[in-house]
Structures are given as structure tokens and as C-alpha cells.
Length: 124
Image (cartoon, rainbow, N blue to C red):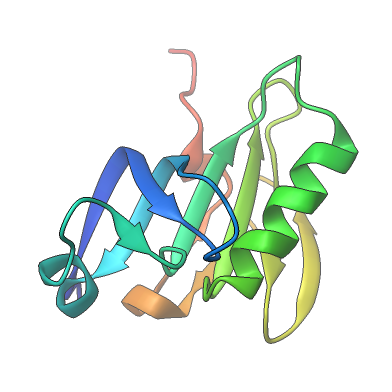
């Protein structure tokens, strides 16, 4: 798997000039864009992952996904720990829901795919 980027938590970015500063629960940013950051990233990270909390509404998450994609993200994932699902919003192919633990979630920005199961802790 190639990397050429940075993964970080609580990553600050400003998706569009008219928006305030946002924070991604988890983000992946290409190395070139990361190296150009002054205070925070202007535009969206290539991959933004939001971990759904009970206070999040469907409308709020959809709005955040659409704004993040408009700001340059390739993908925006909503990870629902209680349902163990991932909803992936993509610029190229729309919205996909991944429920099966063995399903592969494509992550072309870093040349890999992840299984749904790999995103969740399993009980031993």
C-alpha cells in the first residue's frame, strides 16, 4: 500500500472560504498538501472520516459530507459504531453503504481497500 500522505485525528480544515474552521474526527491528506499548511488546511482533506455520535442527525451528516466533497474531498465516510456500518460519500460514484464485515471499502487516495471489519474493534 502506498502512503504519500498523513493521517491525523481532530484534523482542522476549512472546507470552503465561506465556512468556519471544521475538525475531522480522522483525516488523510496528501503529503504535498500537508506540507503547504500554515495554520490549517484550506479546502477539505482527501478523506474525512466522521464517527457518528448519538447527537448527529442524518441531515447534519449529509450536509457535512456534501460540503466536504465540494471543498475537494475524494471521500467522506460516516462510521456508525453501534450498527458497525460505513456510509461512504464519494465525488466519483455517489453514496455507498457498507454493512457486511467482509465488504471492501475502496480508498483510492492511498491505493488500498479496507474491510468493514477492520474499522471496528472485535471482542475476544
